[in-house]
Image (cartoon, rainbow, N blue to C red; front, side, top):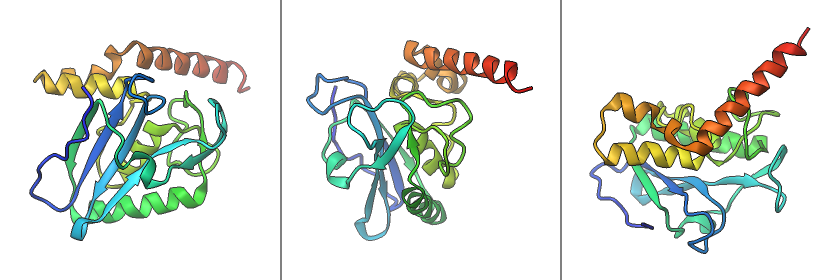
Length: 195
């Protein structure tokens, strides 16, 4: 179910995590995760990160999409999270910092390497969103590497599953599990060749 409905919320400070796992069926392009950040006086900032080079999937320059690319893009799942005024300020500062740093894109980021998004770490759309949200004290995306993992987490919440299940729900996604296995293999090679 595609949605672009604006949830009703009392505070002027909140973020909507938007997630599209419909592959190409919606005419919008590849799967993607992005943020819609609401601030004072109706201010809306968007965070949408991808490869700078068309058809690039690994270790390439990344870029932040213009707002118009995702402003009206439908999503298959969304999650609204309230922000404090300070959290909003820190998130906007992190977005500016990331845009200046020109992070690299990798569809399959290496676990733990994306760090703060600055420098030569691997990042994809969801890890950049995680970095931005963590700047404002939100850990909702922590440990999730794919839109499919996020979709599983949101779905588990919508079903009303207990919090402990929701926290591990991303692992119910086969794609997320494959990325986790890749991370394990990377760690083995890192240890084997780090002497």
